[in-house]
Length: 280
Image 1 (cartoon, rainbow, N blue to C red):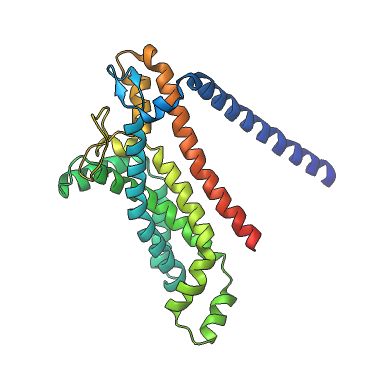
Image 2 (cartoon, rainbow, N blue to C red):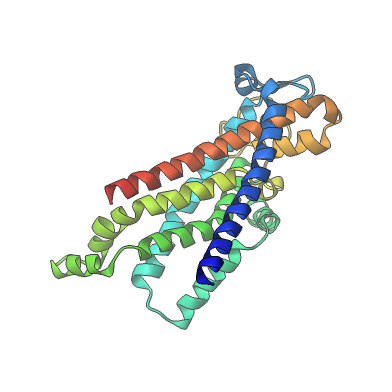
């Protein structure tokens, strides 16, 4: 009976994996087959023209990269520092349990709520206006729970024996964390950060109220400007454009570029994980 159960479980996993991969493959095939005709150097490096019915998506690409950069600069230092405090300094108590539970609950809040909070805090209360800075800070808040959780998990994988050995040699706790724990946990932290940033790059709701625009004549070059972004550009072409059928190939092309961007970030994360396993 045990062998039969093992075979049935194995078959169930294989069938489930095949179904998921098949559905994903069909979706990707549909997007890339329809968007391949629009993909070209002019499409990637050009500006929109003729009422967004022609031209390229360079401003949306630059805006997305600019937005991701601001999100990274804001979320990563605070997220990693919080993870270090929770794992290395905070003692087990009711307060730390509440903090961890709150962080996990924040990770499950719909992204549109972060958009409304960013509108109230950064745009209105702090008077940053609708800008790439407000949108980046809003996405940073959205990314913080994920970065804290993944960084703390990476720190937990470091054996306590390494900390104890370093402390026994006379190093302080701060020196132990800086010179031993963080370098050893860095691949896991970077993997979580890159995966979180790739998710943030595809978000639309948090930037909807904080600074994204359908069209801008030029590139975003400062923090206080509005910007174009690939996910919002795709949303507008797919649902709000006055000539949806005419711009549908451009929408599929934009979706293809966004998928390739996110896929590239994920490949960087997988490469970091692979190199870390080789070193171990």
